[in-house]
Amino acid sequence: MIERVYLKEYVTFEEVELEFSEVELEFSKGLIVFTGPSGAGKSVLMRGILSIFGFFDVNAKIGEAIVNNKIELEKYGLENDDEIIFRQIKKNKNRYFINNQAVSKKMMRKISEEFIDYLSLRTIKEFQSENILVVLDKIIEEKDYYVNLQRYKKLFYEYKIKQKELQNLIIAEKNANEKKEFLKYEIEKIKNINPKPEEFEELMKIKKDLSKIEKIKEKAFEIENIFRFESAVYEFLEMIDEKSEFFSNAMNELRFALEKANEKAEFLENVNIEEILERLSLLNELIRRFGSIDAALEYLREKEEEFKKLQNLIFEKEKLKKELEVMENELSNLSEFIHEKRIEASKIFINKLNYFLKKLYMPQANIKINYSEFNDLGKDEAEIIVNDIDINTISTGEFNRLRVAMLGAKLEYSDDEKTLFLDEVDSNLSGEESMSVAEVLKILSKKYQIFAISHQPQLASVADKHFLVTKNKNKSFVKELSKNERIEEIARIIGGKEKSQKAMEYAKELLRRGND
Image 1: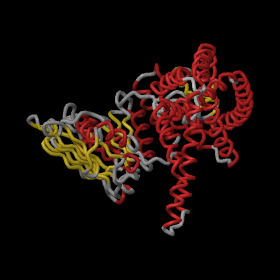
Image 2: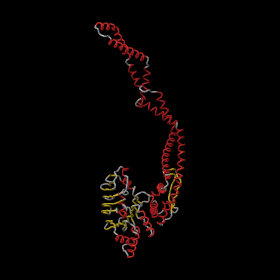
Image 3: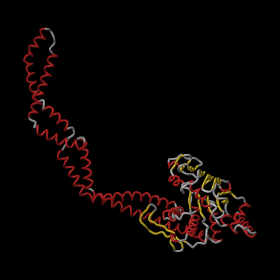
Image 4: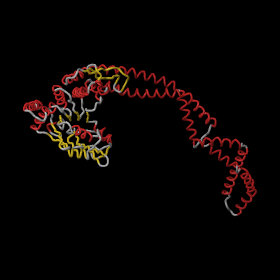
């Protein structure tokens, strides 16, 4: 709830400082009413308060509000605190802060909408099917219901994933033939070359050896002459009493090397150099395209797998269809169970709604729960009908009273700590209608913090806090009224500037009733 508001140099207000935190208001809950002559700046002031939270463009030099709501600021990347300070500063441009951490106006409003509802706007958020169904779900207290509802939500999430897979398969199947031809061409192109790991390196070595074959043969021929002197070396070593083992080993190694060289030469003489060069050319083509033979082989494996999947598309599609059919049957059974329970809950809720509508001198309403496509909350689509008329066609006054009735009807099922802003919700109403709105708002103020602008004495008389907005020489002022000042202001609302004794007495009576 909002504990304090401060505005500096805001339109016709030089400075505004409002405190709303009092023990008797249960930690700032309560009905806070602003009254005053037309044109004094009541709506301007309300817009100024809302602008601190990003609902409107700011014209104040400084705007600040202290809030004690429990908001998970961490999910927005902000540090949390027991007390949250929303601040706006205007210099060359507007800047927004939450607990001294800079945020955008968009984020400021998004965070604020967690605990603020502005009912002057003709938005139908609370009348949307999803929000009605959420309220009905809160009415149902059976454990089995929530088990089935959670089972439905989990299954529906899986169902949506499977549906997406099926759509992708259908699209893939349409393009499959063309893609299969392309894959077949790519696979055959690599398979026809049939590259082997490290083959390119081996062929390059053969090519290099081929260029040296003649020189190797010449040298081998020359080296063979050394064996003519082998016996002489043995004789020499014997004469000098040296062991000949080292020489024998060396000569054996040399014979082995010459034998190996001759075998290699014989092999290379039988190699077709043209075939080698042609093979290297094919492998080079793969290397230029893929970077390496290993990369080409990996690409081949991927394309073969992709081709295999395309070949299995029909099988996979039929399998997926059967899985979806099973899931649809279970979803249908679960949604039917959920639907029946919501029908029962809607009767409870509509009775509460009509109770408040009657107090507000509004026609009776009904809830229609029709079947729709499977969605996150079941197979239901809920709508509220007032006197068999679409709520989009009713007057603004009726619309606002319907919203107030909705808040009353879901009061015991709501866990939200909300601050409501109402701009002349009781305008153009009769005395009885105005009193009914005041009584319902008084009930709501036990749960919510409510800021309301009013030109009617009834709402002003039941306020927990009553502020007067006045204007003098193009300067606007706001002050909290004492009990006697409230009598004076309510009498002014009743009788105008000339406050008659009768108006004063009626004002006292209204204030007495409002505080009973």
